[in-house]
Length: 201
Image (cartoon, rainbow, N blue to C red; front, top):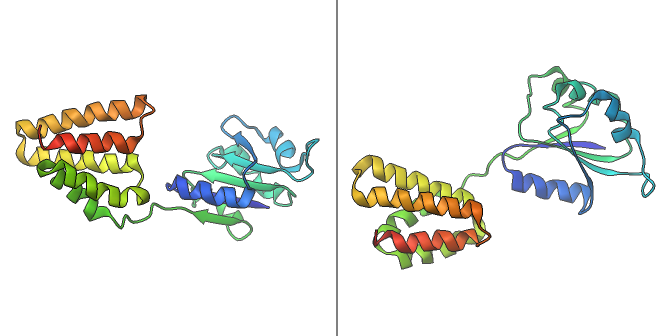
């Protein structure tokens, strides 16, 4: 059976793929594949299993092989296609949309959206209170996405006032961003540290 998982919410898509394929599966990146590889993937077996579990990444982006997919709908393997983008205008998609399952994972609306922006405003006055607010939503938020919202808030602030404090906030966010990308420190700890500093900048 073939299923296609697509959309920008990679976390939810990955969870759904693992529910479908289980914890252990083969992963194949499809950028360099040719049509000659497809019989081995869709019909080939291994020494360990007659039925394989396979994740194909960016299969539809390789138009040459995507056009061949209708020839392999009879596969006995469990196959998941994981796509960031999917061209629904393509003839291949139109041929397949009623024959295999396409599951979209669009970004979910952030229920804590206003609270995220309030945290930045609070941190400018009271870092400890901002950290308390942050801890209420940490379980529901992705730290990197949250950090992006902090940057948006700081940029909006700077565009309004362009003062020394606003400039320092952007400088500190830039330093925090570099640390996030180059260290194994928990992201939430770095974000909390920034919030605690913000009122004294």
